[in-house]
Image 1 (spheres, rainbow over the protein chains, first blue to last red):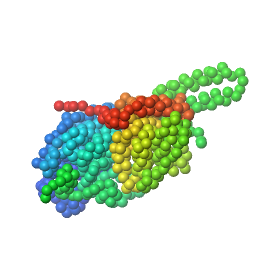
Image 2 (spheres, each protein chain N blue to C red):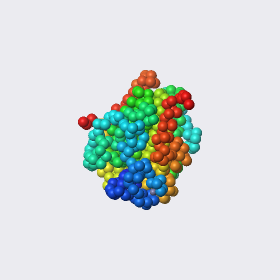
Image 3 (tube, chains in turn blue, orange):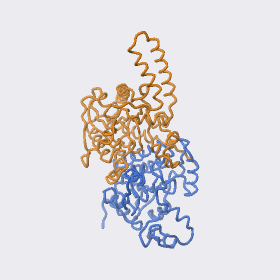
Image 4 (cartoon, rainbow over the protein chains, first blue to last red):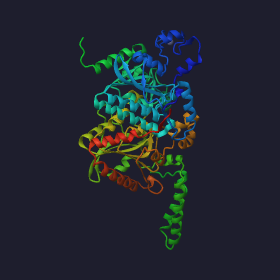
Length: 279
Length: 315
Ligand SMILES: [Zn+2]
């Protein structure tokens, strides 16, 4: 589990400055919003990747920017009657215009049919409750049934959603079991990790891809940095738990900018799916 | 080992001590009988109304039996097996093979310590990735030799440290969940104390999942939840109520198969009886599970986790 408050609230800041210009929160450069929108929301000066929502990723990654969505009406209950869960849920729906922190469905990537799913940090930190777990599992099952690759993008700082208690924790098993079945059947499973992907999400389906691609500078790990600092009583070095750190330690395959993300994804999918291709 | 009693245990223990003292004397059998009835009533009264926070305290009781305390009662010919074959041996998680009532089995469990030295050595029962990878090595071996696996869960959580992150705590946990889901041998899980989130779950995928009566199993520690909700970890007792994570709560939520009752006063009062009650449950589970072909076993295991979670359709 991981508190949203520990993370850089990039999204919020963009919203606060609703004008034409905004400030890069990494280098402080003043940037023209329209230009950022046309350059993958990457700061031209320092390469900082602004947080983008699930809709923007659909436009960037999927053919014609199109997702044929499934399971869009699955919504959570409040199984524990947890303090303020209902209110938090309603606020998130208003903010993101989706009914849960994940969208999933059929799509094509460079003409390759895939099942695609993505969590959205804007919705309760992209945390995984029963619905997120169920939708990941159903997406994986559909990929298995249709024998097409499953591409899973995560922006989940919240890990397993505290508000649904033990049921959220069990989604880690539910999702990982479906990945196990994909692997047995030889169906490609690709992870795209974006800032941040932590705790119960990182410790289940987000760490299990045949190929794992990460955006630069994303915070990726099990325990949140603040909790580790409290435990060991010292400051963590810069770059700790960032994508490049995971690359160095052997836990992701590719770290690439958002600009190169689709090309990398296409190349990997193509090789895994089309075993013979006449040049 | 020094005596240690929780506040709500003290009046019970005082009465028990008075009974013990009287046992040496003559002509006091009436008095003893009276006191015994009194202590029974008191125990029932206290233990039937335990708050979730009191259950947390029982689950964390320093005299609670840990994996290596239960092993001698439950298994013969036990051999501890060490190391993940990649990095190190993690003593916060012990593994081994042995016989359970005549049947060869594999065993894995978190290990805490009863004194400061042992607690430090065992890292308070908080494994690093190599601990989970050692368990996975044993699971794979068990799969090859068709040994049922028996897991004991009692950890505050996976260790939150620099080395743990460098060596892939997330990946180690995730991989166990993936591999255990399709392991071709029965897996029985008993939560004996603290079921601390992902660090517990990484050895808790099973065909049968049981909890000792006064254990808890949660997505987050009550302290962690309290700091997020109220920015105050001392409000843990309130968080415990909100999280609803006792054996009874988890049975209601369909996350566990059954509750294993504890001896009067809790598992720490009688390790031998605790082990026997656990053993009877393992026997019962094995009798059912060993009849199933591996494919059927796995299909049911995955089906069990597929059914976990609550959601609805909105239009
Ligand atoms: Zn910048």
